[in-house]
Picture: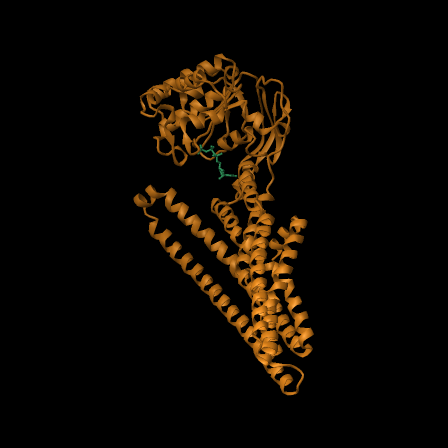
Length: 553
Ligand SMILES: Nc1ncnc2c1ncn2[C@@H]1O[C@H](COP(=O)(O)OP(=O)(O)OP(=O)(O)O)[C@@H](O)[C@H]1O
C-alpha cells in the first residue's frame, strides 16, 4: 500500500480529481439500490407503469454516467502513474551505469538482474488499475452512512463486518512479507544458476559440474514451488474468508432486516436496498484484498532496488587544462573484504611523464586491481593517486578516462557493431582516425577482408570473435582514444607472432610520442623494453629504474 500511497501523494491535484471522480462513481453507484427500493416500495405497491418507466430510465442514465466516470477515473489514474515507472526503470538502469564500479561489484550479478526484473514487474501492481481500485476504498464509508440512514441496526452490523475485513486485509499484507521475500531470493538464485549454465556451457560439458548445477536448480526450484504453493494457498484462504465475510454481511442484513420488517420498522424494499448498499460497502475492501499480494511483491522489488540507489555514484568534477602524464601513487592500500590481509599495502611510486612502466608479479598479485585503481574504477582504502600532482579522486572520471588509452585483460564489447564500439570510445572520430587505430593494432587487414567490415556485429561481449582478434580490437579501441596515458593489461596474451610484432611496433611508436605507459605483462619482450619496473610479488613492491640498476633497458 505504501508504494501506491506514495504515488498518490506525488501528484496532489491529480489525486484530488481522482477522488472526486471516485466520489461521483460511488454516488451514482447508489442508484441501483435506490431503484430497487423504489420499485419494490412504489411500483410493486401501486402498479403504476409510468413510475417503473421513470425509475428505470433514471437508473439507466445513472449507470451510463457511472460508466463514463469510471473511464474518466482510469484516465486520471493513468496520469498519476504517468511515466513514473519508466523514469524509475530508466533511473535504475542509469544507476547501473554510473554507480561506482567497486560498489557495484559488491552486488552479485544475479541480484542486479533480479532488481531490474522486479521493478519492471512492479509496474503492473502499481498501475492505474490498482490506483482506481484503491480510490474506492474510502467510499465504503459513504455506503455505510447511507445504510445508517436506512437502518442504524443494519449499518452497525455491516460496519462490524467492514472493520473485520479491513483488519484482515491489513494483517494479510503483513503475513505475505516473508514468503514474498523468500520467493524473491529463490528467484535470484535461479537467475544465478541460469547465468552459470549459460556462461559455463563449454566447461560444464567438458569438465562436468552440470549434475551439481542441476541438483541445485532442482532443489531451489522445489523450494520456490513450495513457497509459491504456500502463497497460493494463503491467497485462496484469504479469498474464501473475504467471501465468507461478505456472505455473513448479507445474512446479517437480511436477518436484522427481516426482524425489522416483522416489527414494522422497515419495508421489504428497504431491506433489499440495504442489502445491495451493504454489498457495495464491502466490495472495495474485497477488491483491495486482491491487490495485496501484488503490492507486497512490488514493495519488495522497490526495496531491493533501493539498495542500488544507496550505492555511491562516481564523484569528482575537476579537469586539467592538459595532461603531461606524471602518475604518483602514494601509500595506496586496497583490500578485498573476503581476505584477511590487504592485497596492496603501502604502495608508493612516481612515474614521470612519458615514462614506461612494466608491472609484473605472480597471478593474483593485484596487477589488474592496481590498474583499476589508476583508472579510478576502484577506490584505494588508504592513500591516493595523483595525476600531474592533482588528486585523481577530485577529477571527473569521464574526463580522466578520456585521457587514457586502456586495454583491459579481458576485453568486452557492448552489443553493436565494431564501429559503434569504437565510436563510443571516442565520439566523432573520423574515418582516418579509425583507420589509424585499426592499422596500429594490426587488425586493419582482418576488418578489410571481413564481409561486413567495420559493421561486423560484436555479440555477447564480443565472444563471437576469437580471443586474439578480440584483443586486437580492444587495442584498436584503446588507440582510437589517443590518450596521453596508455594502460595495457597483458596486451600480448593470446596474440600470434604477427599480431604480437604489430603490438611491439605500436608500443615503440607510442613511446616515441612521449606517452606515459603502464603495462601489465609477463611477456619478456615487453618487460625487457620498459625502463621502469614494478614487481608486485616482491616483499615490498617498489618501482625500480632498470638503467640505474644496470639491467638492460
Ligand atoms: N590478500 C589477498 N591475498 C590473495 N589474494 C587476494 C587478496 N585480496 C584479494 N585477493 C584476490 O586476488 C585478486 C587479484 O586479482 P588481480 O586480477 O588484480 O590479480 P592479477 O595480478 O592481475 O592476476 P593475473 O596475473 O592472474 O591476471 C582479487 O580480485 C581477489 O580476488
